[in-house]
Image 1 (cartoon, one colour):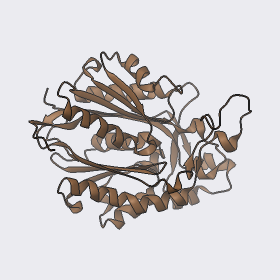
Image 2 (tube, one colour):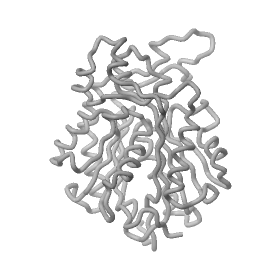
Image 3 (tube, one colour):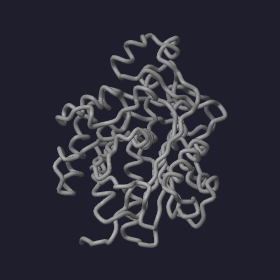
Image 4 (tube, helix red, strand yellow):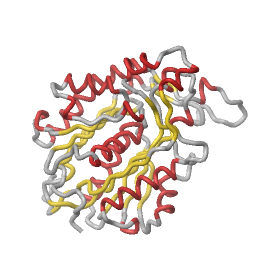
Length: 341
């Protein structure tokens, strides 16, 4: 069943926050049997942003959210949904979204955390916009991706430490002119490599009680080759599927924001899809892979730099551990700050 609505659901505010501490490849390689040049050759990453001991996921999320709300021109009391996309919240529970609700001074708002790893923000934006399109009492939603990956990484593990960093990105969505905003989303899961990117410690199969810290279990593990193969196989497919749902040819998409996992991976996928790098924005070379936060941070920086033009078609695309893939097509607003209030 299809519905004709007098409005769309568009992105009306973005914001991000990064920690102050920067780790260069030269600093990282003091304890690793690799060179800074090798890291750049394989990943494109030159440095990472790492949280200080006093930093928190809720603190990062709050700062990013306030920036996004300021751009949207609304107060937190007007939010109807808050979704936090993360695996590294302050606590196992209650949800980080509840802490963010408190810090922002939100009111009668639905809150929940969404754990889809690096595809989380796409999943969160789709969940929020779907709800807003079927319930006209829901006017504004805040979706935050935040990760403190460094708290779970062995700095001597070359498979993880060269990539992962910390930060938060926030997106506010609200009503907009019909025809703009979200057009379609598509998702795919290939669980055949479920164990390739994981952190077992603290889960119910590997509880913390009655055992000592074990870096083999209690740190993130990542098989980079498996991730690469999954991404180049399924990410272009899910992008095309999202376009097909909207009756758009892939070549009509004006701009792409990918999960910032690896610069070389993004370069490969763009070439595979027969586009040039001018059709995308990357920041992984400068800030590293911020996990669930990366798409929202990249979008915020791309908007700040003026890369996304009014009326353009924007594709958000990412892959998360599991492996789950998401792609979401948006018609950028003529004036992103102006919603249909």
